[in-house]
Length: 209
Image 1 (cartoon, one colour):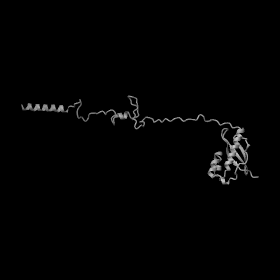
Image 2 (tube, one colour):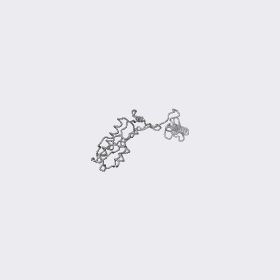
Image 3 (tube, rainbow, N blue to C red):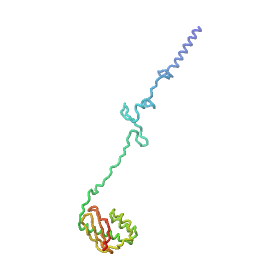
Image 4 (cartoon, rainbow, N blue to C red):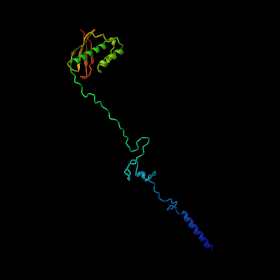
């Protein structure tokens, strides 16, 4: 009777132990050797090496990209800056205007020479004011030549007669004689084309007799 009781207790203990140790989800519980497959997309998983950012995914064919942050394009997205096309002035002349000689051109040359000598002879003005009046009448090449002239050393004081064109060989160059109180000044004028104004290139004092 005692042996039967011991055997029964042993069977019950084995049954309870087996029930406790059996896995609830269909696999052995607590098995440290069980293989666990890494989750898709888990850090360090094989998916990180199979589908790096910017490479096409085998299932969808789409490149994996990062999301846009603070308005900046994500990785793999080109930053394209669109600029407006420059505007061009279609009304600007493409060719120079042909230069010729006629009465209007001669008058313009005489007036330019008179204005140049008048400004040059205004020696009663302050140096800055004297230069401000003369500068616009000179070519860009002549301006550095006359800029440092001291008006107190200019001998002429006024224009005393009508200017006269003395050389019109070139349609872009002219020599104009201007009578003054100390003799006849010669002004060499030039222009860029037929539509450009005459500007003084040289102011030549009277020749000594």
